[in-house]
Image (cartoon, rainbow, N blue to C red; front, top):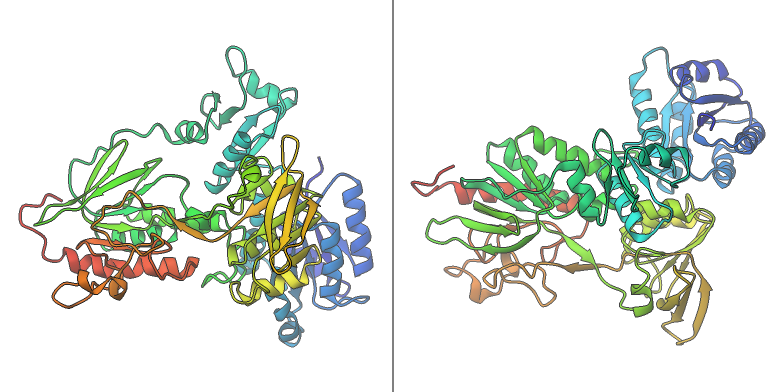
Length: 557
């Protein structure tokens, strides 16, 4: 397979563009087009040769088309390619105001100043970010950390790939009779049983669950070896839990995180978060989570993954709280509940039977790559649904967002609504619900109902992605921790007055049990946004400090 291409589009400044991309020529097929028409023809030739385009880089003015119109045509040919404008320094300030608005609608990914000489590292930082995002979403990544061998793309195989994607480990599925498949089979003893998983520099395993793969990569969970009391036990490794761990550990508190699945929580499945402070070009949920994890590790946080918390025993009169898992217990002077939420079930029985084989809860980044040239549906009106639809549109022939409401404005950020309106592959069906579906061995059709008229319609569908809103999963909490009627944890002034102490409510992120706090989506009244969850995770640490200040005598740290 040929190297992926970078197509430079410039009439007046071809030499500067080529000089700026010289360092990429060893690993990318860098081509030059002098007009939009030539860029379209070059792209046609690349695709006809069996290649693909990773990046289109155009100067801000083209001789035969407005640059954003040209990008629109190029996206129709290669929807997975990233697109950037590299304006010449004579035109950077002039063209910027009119063009930058297009970024908010997803018309392109970055507006940069053309390289001004060798080692313009600010420019190259943006380029490598874009190429990295492209590489993490292509169906067959070049650099593979884990090889999977399976004759079928079943729910288990997809679940394994999804877990690996969320952990930032690129993988590829090989048929048994392929070169990659035979390579793995040569390292397997006995009769093959699929799927076989070959993690880098580790023995080949037959995986019967995602947990088998996690154990192969990170080792089997062992009984928690904490024979001392820690300052903070954080339950959940999403944005709120990671932020709490970073700030607590950086201030010298002994901190552990207990996470049942992949680090990052629901946010870790987001293809691109564009409104997170400090990332003007956006950042994928996976990368945000892994950066936060590495940051927490740097300050000394200990991570225990695959640890499902099934109970918390509150401590009173100076005794520590006890967080219980099936592998042991953690004694902690304070506990931060940051376990997040799960997507609400659709509860349409025929579709529940197809989960993993055409029906998916959440963004399912891995499944998106299986949707090439197919018709898919996204159910949900929040930002997660919008991000999933935009990402799916890179692969699917059509993406339909299904919502009960008359529009998206009440539940989705405007920048996403604008991006959806601009994308010709995405449509929105309002006042509609999914009431039926089926297929022979996988999803093939859906039944849709108009909530106003009751009229039903059957439509072909290859994929259904359900992002229906939040349901708390915290039945493991003790009754002493108050929750609202939906099961979310109550904190601060939301706590019923009869549970206040001396006529005063708990602190804003404190629960009804002293020393137990809640942050992020699990908390009643939270915003259900990545940034707000991170903010609450950071904000809870001063409250933890205040609680720990009068440390009981004799406590072992």
